[in-house]
Length: 337
Image (cartoon, rainbow, N blue to C red; front, side, top):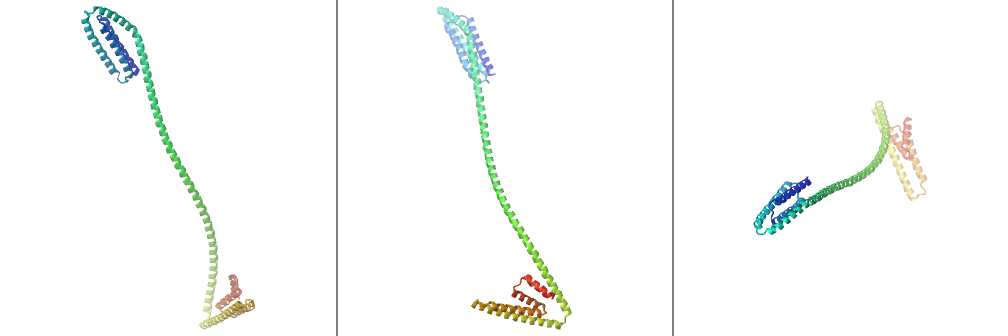
């Protein structure tokens, strides 16, 4: 569209120039100043037109064509005024008019001959201007593409930076999660070890509790049997018998206390002797032990009271250093007999 407008402007200028030249040749033969002024006007119009064509934008073709037409009309008016002045001077300078007319004819001929060359020059200039305009447009488009690419590169760099930040953040989160997993695994191992120890402890406590429960059950059975025996004795015996039995128990207990005190005194005496003479101890200690064992055995077989029996059994177990099981077996054997 821009090149078409430029071609139209050139065509309008050429038509106006040809009209002005035709008017000058058909009119009376003017003097030399009028013809040269017309030629200069045409040359100035064309010379002023071509730079304007090169710099005109594509949005104002009609305004430029009207300005060129007004300029050509002004030049035609100036040439007419000069022609009138020259007609007044023709009477005084006829010789000069003949020479000027011949020169004018030569100049018009040269102009008519040079017209195709000027059109070719104008076309070449238009083509050069069009090429320059296309180059400028291409440069503008390339600059726009470069700017667009630069903006795209900046956007991609910003996105890359954001992705890099997210990657670093994800790496930190992954590291923290790994640390948390390792801590959790360590805590899990500790909890498993603690659970195993607690399970072993619980099993041990269960065994201990079962043993203790069995012992308590046995003691309860013994107590119940003793209570039943006491009930049977209370139901079968009279009050006098009960009093006598309690007196016997008291007497037996006094005897046991006396025997124990005597054994304790003997043991203390023996210990003092051992402290003094550590090499002469065994016989007297054994005799005292045997004496205490002898007294406990005699009391065991002589008495019939349960409490005195229990007391004598305990004394005998202490003297013989019996275990609890052996003491229970001894007690069971005495109760059977």
